Amino acid sequence: MLFLGAGSIIHAVADEQDMRKMGGLKKLVPFTYSMMVIGSLALIGFPFLTGFYSKDVILEIAFGKYTLEGHFSYILGSVGAFLTAFYSTRLLYLTFLSSPNGHRAVISTAYDSSYQITISLFLLGIPSVLMGFYTKDMIIGFGSDF
Image (cartoon, rainbow, N blue to C red):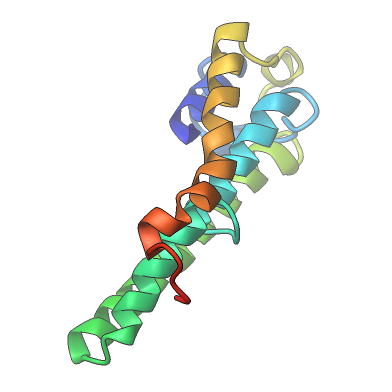
């Protein structure tokens, strides 16, 4: 979903790929912005989204082993989760929320993508929100207190 959203943004700003030359796209491409927020929140493990159940369980199991390898894995996983949250937040800020830094002609003509990409983003956004909750028993274990 994030890769399709990134492609939609790149297409919207005349094939510019440098995030530092974007900015202010929240009002120009609102649907893509909302899908990128959902995808980024799922990626960083925001509670009750898909990434939360997988990432949280992996870190808890690593910590719960009470071994040197388990604690090492937990520390590396936590650092990785922090860096993921950092660059996802940076992506959202530089692309959508900061003031426009690119050429006026490019930024002012940005638009949401065609309906094929929009529908695909929407269909990928639904599982990002709902799939973790509905499959948590399969991942964690049915009826588990974990």
